[in-house]
Length: 325
Image (cartoon, rainbow, N blue to C red; front, side, top):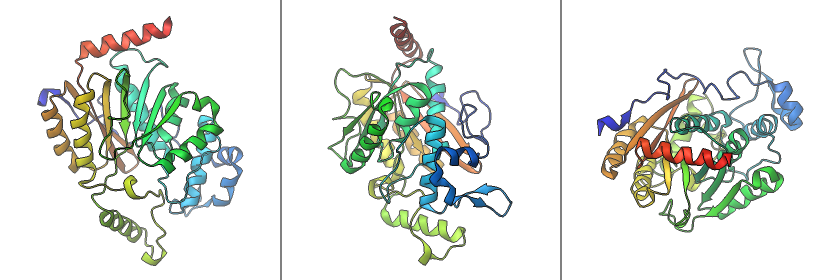
């Protein structure tokens, strides 16, 4: 299987220590412009110890306000918000996943607005479909097991009709399935994406929060939870992200002709060996591990396909021809 593994670097082979070149959030935040886009952000902005304007990233309300401003200013998305304690995504990192997926797709042929993506576990924030359509014009099906999360996602779409026409929400009624019950028999997708729960248990999630607050010099009694939130299935599952993604790989075999590329984020490098074993067992045609970074924070995603290179190129070219017609 070694010949099917691409080294854990960006697709152009360069080391990664910063956001993707197309990421709109590579520089410092321009708080003057962001406040102009979303005035409610102003109350959270102050000078840090270096004299720079910033927010307190430990404050969940401040992070939500920053997200609202970023989404309005850069992507034209209005009315975005999430219920208390739901996962509040870091916008720059989420955008990076989409940009690197676009690079992956471009290797198989010219990209087009006809790209169709399945977001597994879209959450209340619906962030990947919102940014993916704004940045690339892609169409999305977004699924989740949480009906309340989908209700909030639908509320956001009602506020953004230009997004609503390109994003369809579907409830997954089987907590043990990823694609079954969501992908219909005659449907074809260019890729799937997923941000899996990476803790093995709620106790592990709570322990991670405690460590984080100690590192920040905060008293545990002050801890209101993660600044990026998250609850239940958003944070943990039995076996953590490794088992989650391995099960996803196993199920993808049954849908191998429905999608060109499957993919999932992997937060811990220690999860990779088990994921690679699952890919070998599934006898995929190829897989890629793509590293991403934002400052000192490192992440990555693994993508796999059951189509060979010629088949993928043929499928992508057919897609482009369809667009030109």
